[in-house]
Image (cartoon, rainbow, N blue to C red):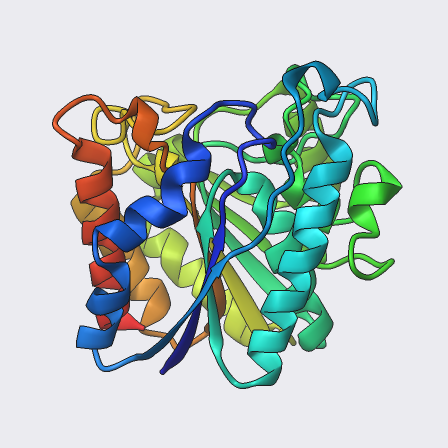
Amino acid sequence: MNINIIGVPIMYGCDRDGVQLGPDKLRELGIIEIFQNNNHNVYDMGNLFVPNVLNKDKFKDHNNMKYLEPIIDVNRNLAHSVYSSLKSDTFPLILGGDHSLALGSIAGSSKFYNRMAVIWLDAHGDINDFNSSPSGNIHGMPLAASMNVGDPRLTNLYQPKEKVFPEDVYIIGIRDLDPGEISLAEELNINLYTMDDIESKGLDNILKKVLQNIHLSKVDGVHLSFDIDVLDDSLVPGTGTPVKDGFTLEKSKYIMKEILNTDLITSMDFVELNPKLDHIDKRTEKIAIDLLEFIGENL
């Protein structure tokens, strides 16, 4: 497979220093060689430019969304990089940085495909808007904006249209939702699977249902967005918003294998590794590179 590695060293979406170091840390740990060793043609596209904005200016462009304009600028460039990769028959693998980058990766994919689905592996829903967000952090808004919910400057990114229909969104592993997110999920009838659902219904049954629904739908592209905080907080201390009672490494690999072996996935994010927070025996970076090696074996 031809793969473009696209680094997005952005921290403005989470407003937490260190996550911008994620792409280069993964390169340092050998991600390029790992994918090459799995018989992929890998093209390192480098890191997208992220402008320097002072902390005092974070609310310059909106009263309840931090760093709005720089996030839009970076994601517009990312969207075009993703779209260009797909046009050249190359798989875009986007390395974060925080999860606000999904605004661009989904927008770029949606321009290429007639109708796309999104599988969102995350402890959080990221379906807030500027009214419901308790923090103003845009990394909690990209999936909502991709479904055309929120500020027009986010929803109209790259193309002035809905990027993905709610019925084509599948959130798996969630266990930390804000009240506004719960309301939106109910209103839009989003396919949302909490850890409690997984416990009661069974992981195999849920994955089977998700993949079957995608097969039966009219989508022609599937974007996979993987936030490392979907794992249990004991495994990923080096991320900004860890949450207890998440997936084990083994369960995460099992999920990735079941999804990737369908050959449905056409683009992917890997986000929220924060090397500055990874104080416990570099545990998070080791797990991150282990997961990426497994992904390389199964793509």
